[in-house]
Length: 438
Image (cartoon, one colour):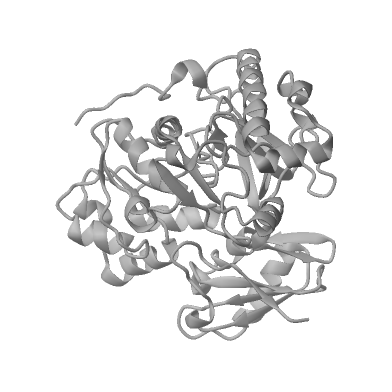
């Protein structure tokens, strides 16, 4: 099998100096502002309302002069105009080679597309991401996204894998059948890497069948996926699959690739030559101090068709812009969680990952499906956690879990045991927060 040991898919770009990187960002930002103002009804109206003209943007240092956009701004434009692209399309529809939509985690999905030039750039960006994860020329892997979710922007990762020289099997008609397809139908393929997605279902399948994946795929080197990964989840995944877990992802909305290297985990490298990265206070929308926690804001510096500039990602993160030991000079972003998967309790914001790390440390609730119950009025006085339990709950388990959660989260907690069917598992994302009446 062919193998290459170089650290980066594009070393010249990955390791360029921060000064060179900022010069490149400046050049691309100026061009993108001119593009969207001249061709996008949404951006022209949005920038005019803020009193900003393209001539105001001379370098990346001027990016804060641009207003920050969010999904609600796009939805309002779509409701007013009926435009499915929310006024963001900068090319004729005949120029598009593919149209995608977002998953709609926090509301109605966005629709966006790519030109051929966009396709070529996006697949190269995904190749850079997958190379960092560990995929190499000659590797054999799967990609359920291309088969089960062709409507999603990340389905193009399959072409990123092919671009770097991997063989890609796209046979999963349902992303909930990843384990069955790759451990039964593809048992003779000797895969080197497995792209997984629903760990709650996949690990259950492995355990019930007593499967040791490396006995089926002897050259399996790692499994990888695109979801926020807690320490507890990573431990369980690596134990069940018998190989390291590598994380990647960021957003299909703007074809944003990010991935861990061996030094950065759990933080993920962004491609700052392609995307400007900011962290802002969610209330004031002003930049936070370096290293402080805030909301991720990303600007697409390359797309022709539907580039979003200063786009709120609704993720709470910290960012490190110092060089990484792997040699990359690009930002490393550490995710705390999604706002949509959080609840305000008293003076604290609790994320689903905070709860998961506690629950999954207990044998009775290891890999249990769970939900945070969010009251209509926020903040709420107590946190309620619904969770499934393996087998019959032992005496005192409810009190033990509540005590551990209260100690870790510093808020009062009620734990409620529920049946698995009471917690939804969709084809895209596990439903980690449910809303209840006050």
